[in-house]
Amino acid sequence: KAGYGKRHAPDQAPPRAHDFAGLEPREAAIAAYIDRLPEGAAIGYKVLAEELPDYGQQACRSALDRLTRAGHLRRIRVQVTLSDGQMRWVTRTYFSRTARD
Image (cartoon, rainbow, N blue to C red; front, side, top):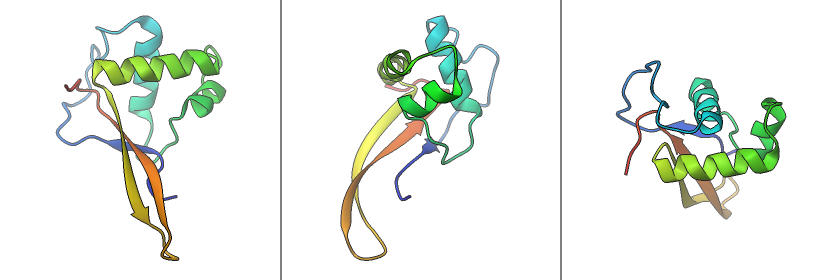
């Protein structure tokens, strides 16, 4: 689907062992998991809760909000044109192991 799934942010630093050391343990674990996912992978809180049995939906949702505030996750709403000509608003989610403002 157009606009769905994880997108890598440009100009990230290469992976290092301490990329998420400044985060709380839950957020660091979820960030490390998201970082390992391929481009286009679903990273909504419901999907993460299914894939990470240690965390429920609300914990994953809170972690995603904290990752956004920490600068690792950015959600941008854009309008796209589908193949049939219809317009639709989608949220593009960019993830970076390098925290940004």
